[in-house]
Length: 192
Image (cartoon, rainbow, N blue to C red):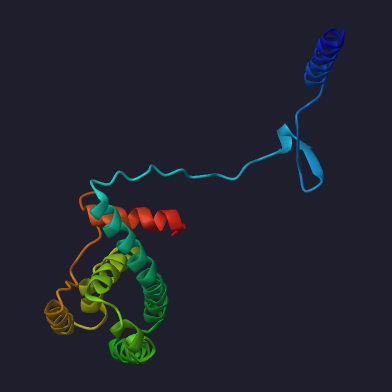
């Protein structure tokens, strides 16, 4: 008797649930409020493919690269922002001498502000920074120096950088360089 009663009860409850679902609009409830499906919009979600590493050494290198990239990216973003402001202000100056003077003032200010912090970067972090500056501005660090200062200054800075195994002419190419692909993946996952 109990089995028959429980079977009838399950059938009755499932029939009520199915009837209720057919007559009502779908509502979403959150934070004590409910809205119909037609009024509810979801924000866009980006799903990234999982990176397939060749071996565990490559995975370790990726994690080290992630730490270094996240350490130097704020400097690259700040450099791109400052460069935009500098170009806007230089566009307002008519005379070449005023532009050169203003550029020197900005260079001196930036050196005073960041020299101590940038000296603490490792060689690989410095090279990543050069690549990220290219990613953010679309120009190599060498080209930026040549535009803002002069060719000799850019050449001499590149010589000094070469002594530390850093090239100011390095470009960011995530399609042809596995390291740059990893850097791009790291930055996209962080929302940059």
